[in-house]
Amino acid sequence: MSVATQDDLSGGQKRRLPLTLIVGLILVGLHVAIAALTLFWTPYGPNDMAGMRLEAPSFAHWAGTDRLGRDLFTHIMIGSRIAIQVGAGAVAIGALIGVSLGILAAFATRTLDDALAATFDILIAFPTLLLAMLVVAASDGASLSSAIIALGVAISAIVARLTRILAKRVLEMDYITAARTSGTSWLQIVFIHLLPNIWPTLMVNFALQFGLAVIAEASLSYLGLGAPPPNASWGRLLQEAQGTVYTAPFGAVAPGIALVILVIGVNLLADGLRDYADPTRGRR
Image (cartoon, rainbow, N blue to C red; front, side, top):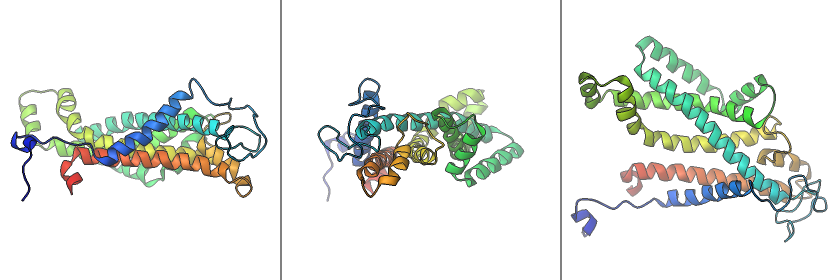
């Protein structure tokens, strides 16, 4: 038999942070700290040809140098900043558009709701990268801002569909009916009752979309549709290193490792948030 703890006897159980949440926070926090550091300091300038071409990692150049003699560790640090900017910007745009459209669909008439739901499904049917490529192609050209907007638009359909499903489920609750009967306005229902109930699930989805946005931006940069030079996106570093992958493999390995660490950290963060929001799932 298990012995009840003092917290259980007092009527409340102390909740511990899931290990996945802690590890995810550490990995993502590391990238955020590096991104903030690049605003003030980097080992070398991004365009400084401080070493020989394709040098191996050393004390002077921790990740070696590229084919022009530039310090790779400096570019990887700057890549962290670009990845954080793209992920945060794309999720912010996707959340603003998606949550607004999802709530609108939940409150709309049946005809408008069906039309919006069909539109969300059609947009989701397109791969995120393909939809982002179309948006970038329709803009003035490849740039960091166009990549953020493109990915934000692509994410918005996923967020809108999830928000619609969650909002309609909450609006069917009895306390919502009681609030409407008592004369509570629709705006008050949204901010007092609706958003607080769906926000934990949305936060988990935002974390997942952050990781997808980082991967998609790296793919866009690899194809030449992301942040243009001198922005050192990880995708562009991988594209530049593909020609020397056999003679200087660390040029491709280092940005790949940085990308994998950030994506794993974001996924662990999402899993941890899900476990924390649902303690029974964590115990299982």
